[in-house]
Image 1 (cartoon, rainbow, N blue to C red):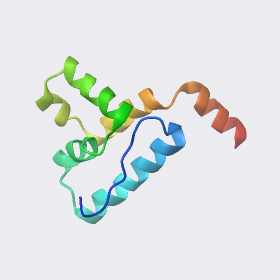
Image 2 (cartoon, rainbow, N blue to C red):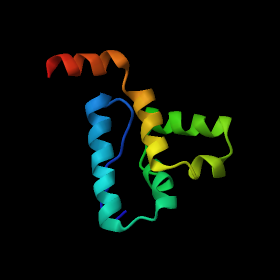
Image 3 (cartoon, helix red, strand yellow):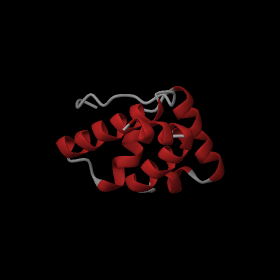
Image 4 (cartoon, helix red, strand yellow):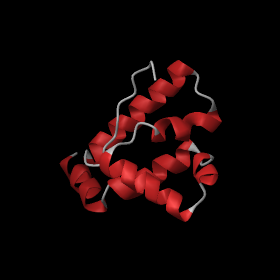
Length: 95
């Protein structure tokens, strides 16, 4: 936590989520975070809507199973949830 990771609230949109992911990947590199701890560490910074969504993930699976998900799986699930296809299309169109 000394690396000062940013929180993700779930209302930042695709750009906010992408920045959060980039920041976390940087923090993982700096802190030498063990592969098996990445999801648990990242989940600890979720707040608001994102935290509610993550907690609901536990309703469908055991906490131990959710915590052993890979960072890649967590990123994919979060992109699926917090990056609506319309927003992605709008961003692609702007580029």
